[in-house]
Length: 475
Image (cartoon, rainbow, N blue to C red; front, side, top):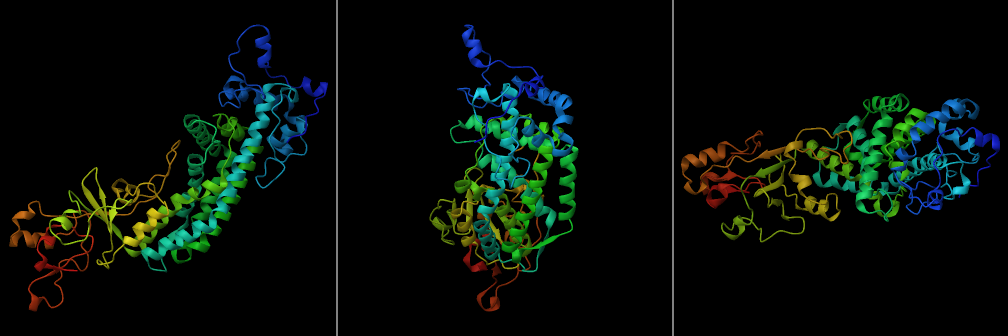
């Protein structure tokens, strides 16, 4: 709770911005009020009140008329405004501070509604980022363990390094997952929550474009570009990345609270004029979703693993009709063993290791699904549009693009497998993928083929016409 502000006559006389009358004044005159933006409003805090109260104009007018005397140059905007309002015991420009608490929602505490909304936005910015950094810490042990498990299941070269600026970009974008998975308090209807989340996103983008935050952002980015992380040590490296990310967020929040232009850029979309609460216990693990997908991609790259796509192919056919694989049906993830089937396009996907084509990744698929790394396995397999691209986030977007960006290789199956003759056989053996190079073992004869007849090695991911003739292949 904040202690009541001590408002002297001289102090009140300096609050020169337009006064918005309380709701009860309109009602007492028998008139309706366009919007109730009072601290005690029955409608609660409303992001529309930022524009209705002309908060940007109020703040700029306050700085012009009171900024020097209030000490904006020395204290920064937020701390100067708090002191000017009588709240000298509050520290809201440091996200580690525990002395930035919610302002009272009583009309009598404030000179006007604008003062309340300035104080609320100062508090809300601190609260949001304070709980965001706490969420990163609280979910770190689970996330680190899961990242380590992903690496173990893919089993890449332990010496593989990945450029730190790629990791850094994904870590940076975790903030945007926070607004999607956590967002404003649960009492809000989803439409309102989504609007508030989008407003926060737009505010963050705008604030980072201001000089005071842009300098911090560029400094951390340049530092990250000089570092590399080892996949084999990802569980430990993640802790270092989280610490660095928290330090950066702390620096950015302080800059945003101190610099009035950055503060206005962050808050003017209205996202912090709603009641924003983070459920750290239940939702913090969601923050690492992008990092888990990116780790999976990096581990796959390190081991040469790709996603093999079999177009116009249902794996159940090779169980029910051809009896060449086991696929009686699909589990909750939409897979049978190593194969994931897309009902929308009648295509089958599978993890594929060109250097070890008989490796089975059923355990990896089950781990991804059981741990809810994704809500739909299409996010893992149907990534043709992201193949080879780096993770990114468009301005105003609410999800990381291409966090999963593994290479997708489409099998080049003959068009008429039922008319399989010697020519078709040679074509099937000669061409493996339409858009990728062949495995080193592709087209090679099986051991002992001189005694058993001509047979060719087939990878586990293969679902083409060579499976029709068991006498022609081995696995």
